[in-house]
Image 1 (cartoon, rainbow, N blue to C red):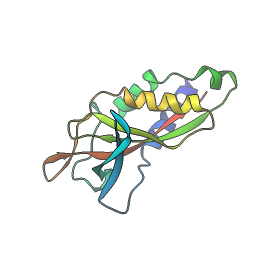
Image 2 (image 1 turned 180 degrees about the horizontal axis):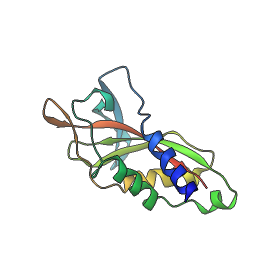
Image 3 (image 1 turned 120 degrees about the vertical axis):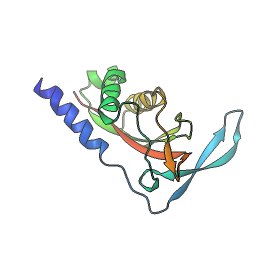
Image 4 (image 1 turned 90 degrees about the vertical axis):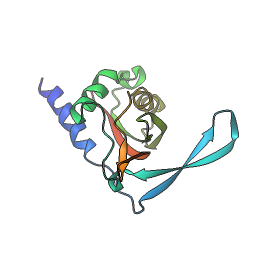
Length: 148
């Protein structure tokens, strides 16, 4: 029980470290799924620079609960007793959907990185961020911890 509480505490503390950016709007490159050779740009707002920040349905506690239920410890990492934290970025679109999931800082073990991205891609729709009352796409950063 004590170990579980430490895991929850660590995850909740890691959620507080949203990395601020120097500009209000940031360009994010997106690839056209029909053609890998063409790329387009999408303007998104930084998390700290919107009037209303995007929110997981149910708030931070629900987000922590979701991650703990959905995350599956990769077998190879478990077997080798490897722990780590994967810092991911993603965009909460103006309709609340998740896109542009990528890894900012991963672990040496690729299976942990893939699992963190899978957990984020499977998230339900969020409440969209707002600027001036209008829903806008917002870039978010979320660490996913793997602790034994």
